[in-house]
Every structure is written in C-alpha cells, then in structure tokens.
Image 1: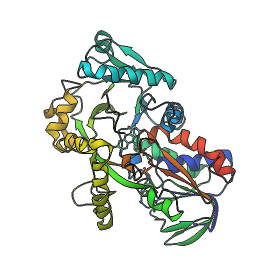
Image 2 (image 1 turned 120 degrees about the horizontal axis):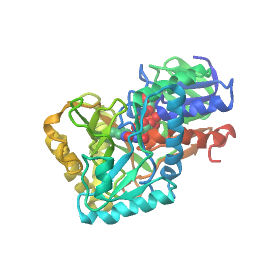
Image 3 (image 1 turned 30 degrees about the horizontal axis):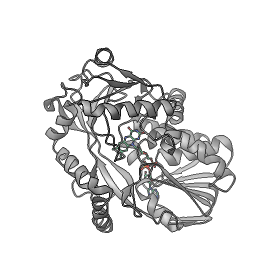
Image 4 (image 1 turned 180 degrees about the vertical axis):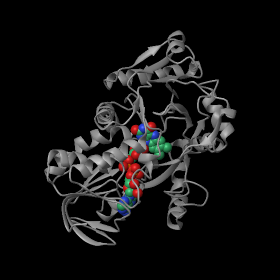
Length: 402
Ligand SMILES: Cc1cc2nc3c(=O)[nH]c(=O)nc-3n(C[C@H](O)[C@H](O)[C@H](O)COP(=O)(O)OP(=O)(O)OC[C@H]3O[C@@H](n4cnc5c(N)ncnc54)[C@H](O)[C@@H]3O)c2cc1C
C-alpha cells in the first residue's frame, strides 16, 4: 500500500468498486485505493442478493431510487456486455393474490410510467403467455427490462476492471479509523484526498468517525433463500408479489438466476448482528446489544407496523411457510422441490431515530473531505454504476454536496 492517494474507498462491494471505476475512467492516472476487509470480493450484500437488475418502478418518483434505477439497469446491462458477464433477459411479472391488491398494482404501474420505465398492465391471458406458471387476479404487471446476472461474477469483473485501470484493490485489510485527509489500517496511516465510505453494513460506523449520520441506527435484516432442484420448475420469468408500501422489502418472490436456477426468497427478518449469516457465526456482543436496543424502537414506530412485519416474517424461517408464500404466486412451486439453501444476505437497513421509521431511500451524505453512502439497500446492486456516475462530479470538485 502506498502512502498517499487522490481517492480512497472503504469497502470493496459493488458501490465502492463502482466509484473507483468511475474515478479511474474520468481521471486516468489518478491514485485510487479500495480497502476491503475480507480476503475476497463480494463476501457481503453485493454477492449475497437476488441478482436482479431492477427496472425502477417501485419507487416514489422523487426518490434517489427512482432516479438511479432505470439508468443503473442500463449501465449494468452495458457493463455485463462489455466485460463478458452472462446476463439473462428474464423480464418480470408482478402478480396479485386478490382483488384488494389491484389498486396497489395499478399504483406501481403509474409510478413506473412516471419514472420512465417500460411497463405494461396485462390480463391473465397475456400473463399465461409470458409466464405460464404464474397466477394472478384480473391483472398483472409486465416489466420487460428486469433481468438477472450472477452478483459475484459482476463484482469480480468490476474489481478486475478497477485493477486494469490502475486502481489498487487491497483485500484482507480493515480500515480501523479515518478522518478528513487520512485513513488507518494495521499497515499504518495513508493520506487521502477524498474518502468514499461504501462500507455497507458498517457504513454508519465509518460515517460517525466523520460526525455524519448520527440520526440513524442500523437494523440488519436477513434474507434467506431456497433453490429448486435443477430443471424441476421450468420458470422463465421473475415472479413477484405486490409489496407492502410501508416497508422497503419486496416480499418473497421467485427468481430465475443467470444460470437458469429457480430461487425462492428472501425473508426480511431482523438479524442478531450485522454479519450473523448462520447459527452463532458473526454474533458480535456489541452488535447484538445494539440490535436489542434498536428493535424496540422499530416495533414502537410506524403505528405498530413493525410487530405485523415480524408476525409475517418470522414464520418464513420455516421452509414450508416460505414456500407457501411463493406458491401463492406460482402454484407449482412445491416445497418438495426446494431443498438447497441459497447463500443468505443481510441488508444494511437504517432506522431513522427521529421517527423510528425504516429509511426507504438511499442516503448519501457529504462529510469533511468525504462522501458517505448509507442505507445502500435494494436496488443498490442495480444502481451502483449510476450512483457512482452521479457522485463523481462532487468528488472531483472536492465537494461531494454538489
Ligand atoms: C437479501 C438481499 C437481496 C437483495 N437483492 C437485490 C437485487 O436483487 N437487486 C439489487 O439491485 N439489489 C439487491 N440487494 C441490495 C444490494 O445487494 C445492495 O444494495 C448492494 O450490494 C450494496 O453494496 P455495497 O457495496 O454498499 O455493500 P457491500 O456489498 O456490503 O460492501 C461493503 C463492503 O465493505 C466492507 N467493509 C465494511 N467495513 C469495512 C472496513 N472497516 N474496512 C474495510 N472494508 C470494510 C465489507 O466487508 C463489504 O465487502 C439485495 C440485498 C440483500 C441483502
């Protein structure tokens, strides 16, 4: 590791690598460092997600998610083509389970059109031609630009490109402290022109070193997946439910991976700690304590929507109950087909302490000589290249608030 860099990024997930890539493309020869604590890339959310290139119709037109998803989808399509990462043009259908969901489905359609996303309301006959295995009530939504790619393959290709462009990607190295103009690892201190905090599940902690984001607490939510036996369920398209608008989660869905496997999930269950993926692995005492203090605030907020979410989500720890949800969308998704566990992921979800609500949008905050990417939850994998494109002018100007 050198001693001085124009740009240093904390976190080698898709967001951090996308920022490094954008900087090197705009300023060839810039000294760019990405510091990643894990020995491999894509060990956390960027490699543990549904691998869905979202289209951008869920989000309120004023939101950063709406602004960045359509563009991110286009940029990620182009990236996969350029770098030879396999991509599957699945498209996606959103289906209803009863007449009470039709107004919400129509609202998604309206939002999508407002966000400039290609989208169509279709009748059950058309749905049967698009995805014969899906069921709906009266109408469904068809999104032709939603797609799939292997999230690990995407992140590895991006890491390769950053290195080819002259960036330094330092694996197995934890950033232990940082402030305006510097960061520190076990190898010592380096000088940094601008620091980008893309530390995912630890972004709130890094931000606090700079006095940023004090109004938030991180509440990790775990997503579990199950795979159908290869070839046992001939699904062609992603099939999603109408989501509950009070939460930033999309509900249990069925997706087709880039390799053609069918995956059911994810759950949205509070995790005991930030990297507690399985059993007692990753249970860090201070994090368990923080979750124990934060969870009651979530449960008390949002007019008691939190307890309802828990009551719906906790049963999905059982494969049978999770697949029962999936079968409401695709009746052929029998529990007996799904025996292989997918790699679970944990969302770096923030709770806003001012009103005890889950933050629905991405949060990007400027700090002294730094930019902090907080709440990089779904669709943060789809939007990473667009987010980097948007952040770059501020980083180059030395003032990320621009
Ligand atoms: C279950 C699940 C399903 C999802 N599905 C989708 C989907 O289908 N489509 C989509 O677009 N998005 C999806 N997302 C969201 C998407 O995965 C995230 O928005 C995205 O991966 C965030 O990227 P990131 O780079 O911010 O975080 P991460 O990938 O978590 O990267 C942050 C990195 O920072 C490192 N780090 C942390 N602290 C330090 C430190 N002190 N020093 C050095 N390194 C550090 C970590 O090791 C980690 O590698 C999903 C997420 C989850 C959890």
